[in-house]
Length: 344
Image 1 (cartoon, rainbow, N blue to C red):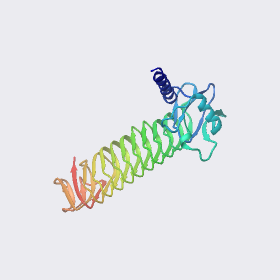
Image 2: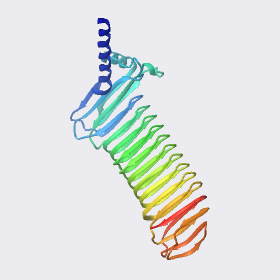
Image 3: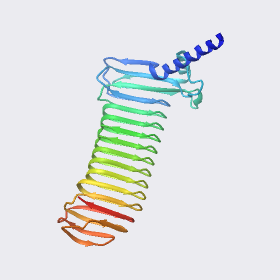
Image 4: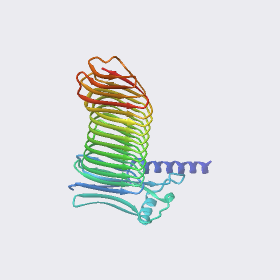
């Protein structure tokens, strides 16, 4: 009985130590009182990177745990220190206004089963520029103003309350952008993208995931090679394209160009911009547009619409071409399938 009790105590202690190392306290904290920080460079091979702008003292928190989260996932602080000294170069410093946090392996072919995952949480002034790289972890940026450049080979990207020139890349993770403005350029090779309450020039690209847009204002380019595109409350100019998924865009007050090669398209425009172009190669199109002055061109296999009043031009079962309410904004709808057009 005593033996089992002893083993239980050791087991509980190991679990508690592991939980503390991973979730509670950082392995290392370094503060930079009185430093005028303008730039941040951070790089790690497996962990995540978080940069948060604040009015408080600049500091870096370093979190370290085993990459192999198997049954031997907990190291003591002494074991971690020994492994850091033997296998890694860890730099946390400020020189000439540049904060640097870099963790790199001394070995080119480090065994991942015995490797460490090293993550950084960095707190800086709001007005800083960043250059961030991680090989597998996620990247989080919050409350920053400046030029931001960040890349991860597999983790997700999370950007919140950024202002300035923002460019982020992930090879497979998802992207989440909220309350950002000015110039935003975000790309993933396979994950989904969500953008909420952003303004300015916004470019969103995924090679296969879905895209969701909400409450955006500006010049917006959202493209996916295979997923769906959904959005609402868009102002300015919207280019939304997918090579095969559905498109569902509601409550639009913008210029619009949208297309899919195989899915269905559902569009609701409550206020026309300078133009509207809607194209589909295979599925159906349902479009609701304002009954205003329009130069209307509609072509499909079958067109369903109410009787057009104050219209001059030609109306056929598969084509409509003419001016509505004296003409004005060009609206073009093309589909190899059916089109349902509603004027409100």
